[in-house]
Image (tube, rainbow, N blue to C red; front, side, top):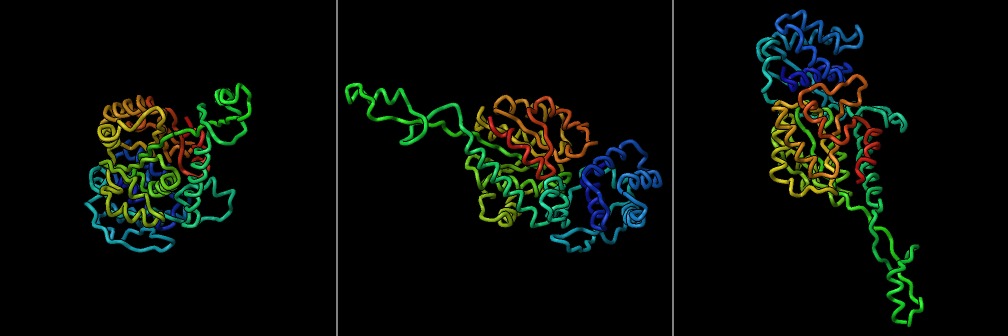
Length: 369
């Protein structure tokens, strides 16, 4: 099944008020691999059991399922920016079986994430999934990134540097200075620890299966990029694009506008292995043991797992630490069973969730070498 098409169907359900999270999308994709997709009733009951939470959801699910199955969904409901809901005309292939078997159909360009206004309580926001964040709450992601960067910049290394004034006397230098005064310690020299020179490389998945999270995680990357000089940022779906320059904007909105104009393949298919292999060819020389490489992806890869494993092996060999952030890992029932994640796990130093503010806060210790 094409995961992007399943995400489109789930997005339509969310647009009608159903509570469909990324965990349910993963479960639905797994279910469709083990049932007979030509049996309409079996598909209907299987998906309904996964994608609804109460009997009140049944009529809406039945309406949208009927539209997808019968080829003529005259309208799919899509959540626009804020809380505005609009209708979109969609031409569908004939029958759900065809819809499930065509994995390579491209997803529409310019897809917008689902944004549902949430409560403003500070304590609950830390645990709230990104898909439920309102526009005002999203600004906290950038603020959190700036706070993390500030702490990173203040982390001392083992090396020392001379300073004019300080709390630690540089005895060796002070003794050398005393030679000018016949061995009398009249002038003292001082030293302090150098700041750690950690470099960050962030590679973010913006394919269709990450559509609910990628733009929100990019806001975190934007906060890092504009607060810390040593950050290189990349995005990928089927191809890799460097976006360090595009994120250098005064506002996140302007940064997104530049990304939309200059980066191709948003919300499309996923080729993680090929994209990382391309990164190794063009950018691996910039990676060293002072570099933390962060990959933001759910691990859904349409390429060969051997290519992904080989690319990650080379990346791990060069980097100081390889961190993989998976939004789906925030769900207690999630297991990394996809071929992409299974190929990647042996080469990952840190495998962590990235689905809410609390998970991003927990990332800080992993960014210090």
